[in-house]
Image (cartoon, rainbow, N blue to C red):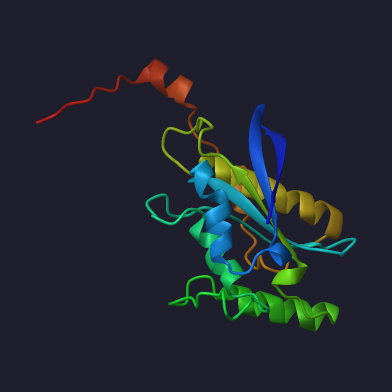
Length: 194
């Protein structure tokens, strides 16, 4: 198993990215093992269908729970619900978290006539963990903006949302926030311990 490394530029910041071919993994837990050394907490991700010329992005998302003890939990749980994992190596998932991937694959099959499994998927992770967040009030501001950017780029090419992103959350595109540097000019923060 190997990780392909890449970088992207977003809002004048260089973001480290990691690409994993699920066809080279035996279990969804391999994703955690591969990415654990990078201590990724804040990220965006894409599930990409291999071999599609257009409409190749199955789903775009971002990290949700920075308190999770499992690195990239959202990604590995969704990947765990794809078919064709090696049953002798695959650790069954407990609970419904990530199970929306089953429905996404069924909708993809109904729309495109193609069954997809983990062998057809590449996952891209964009690591924002060590990138300073410009927002004073929303700790997920930057990754939400990047997720919206990825969805908007897809929509510009394909005229619709990725099949796994059923809710149009374009209202986030209009959301603004107070930049930390501006906030600090008007307010003084003091750490007080009692």
